[in-house]
Length: 124
Image 1 (tube, rainbow, N blue to C red):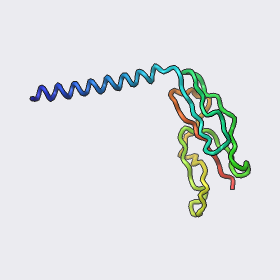
Image 2: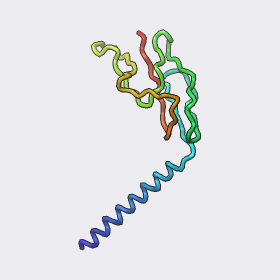
Image 3: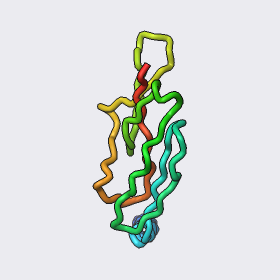
Image 4: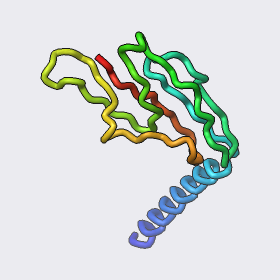
């Protein structure tokens, strides 16, 4: 009984490793990387760029949002968190929390599909 249980455990473990390795091989063998842009309500930019591995992302034109006196484009982020402008106010005005967001630098080369998010500073 112990041998059968051990055999089943080894068989399942090997099966899982094989599946994971095939999945990883597929990702590693992919020749292109897709970059998606989310303007968060800003003016449209090309929504996607498909790059060959090793290519840099072509920075799109900076979007604008609403009345340009209300919002300032703060850059493209891979991870974006927002904070309330005034936590004591009942207003829902939010802006990029730069301390807890990750700004993307266009001189780097992406290694996987990703979305870049527009960050905005509220000027009011």
